[in-house]
Image (cartoon, rainbow, N blue to C red):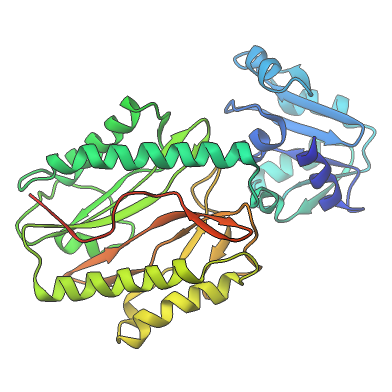
Length: 349
């Protein structure tokens, strides 16, 4: 498997085996999507440990692995790890308590290996198709919600309806808790839907994404209830301009930090630099937030096959906020926008 070969190359000479405990990486390297288990792998051995709830599923989903059924992982694992002198583990995945438990149980030395998840940045064609399908479902679900966004509807009701529509369209569920933020709540980038009801003149920020066959989508649109004020039109257009500049600049080989700065400069030049406090975007795949990070501290360059978001925003406390987000596939010759929902300011209510 190419994924495992890249993992072994990434390990280089730091260890002679690797322990994979996080669900996304476990799924990526083996195909097993269950919620419990771990992998112990090396160039000469591929073991998948899980309990009796998932044994048959693991055998079906991970045919290249030997499945070991166990109800007590830390008692079973050492029996298969005695040939390893150094075992790498995902440095970001284990708590200190878990690390101590594994360290005491395993005969070999545990070696922290940072950044294993970065191996998932460039997607293969099958992954791209799954993300594109998740994006398609997200667009369709949001379109079905819009006629129901009316004065008096609560944020919680709108979020529930949107996630319901995702399910009806074939999604496994939402890729993350849906954000519906209205009025002054729209100035909170990660607001949680509450009992507040939509009122005339509100901005309504909806950040949503479906999950399809394990892969995520991520989409944000901002709407206005009734007719927008002059200031609302001004702020919305500024965010849209910044997003379009970012999309136009996005290409393989561009630095993550450079792309962030390109879009950020549009908002900064208009005097709203302090109102755009988060990064321009992030990678999306098995998790909704993956590498690369498009931010002032982002590292590395974009490469063909990466799927990232471009999502500038302006947030004014007590007044409201705007965010516009697309899901974008980086290609050798440019980009493909996977999000199809239109971006002109739409009035609802």
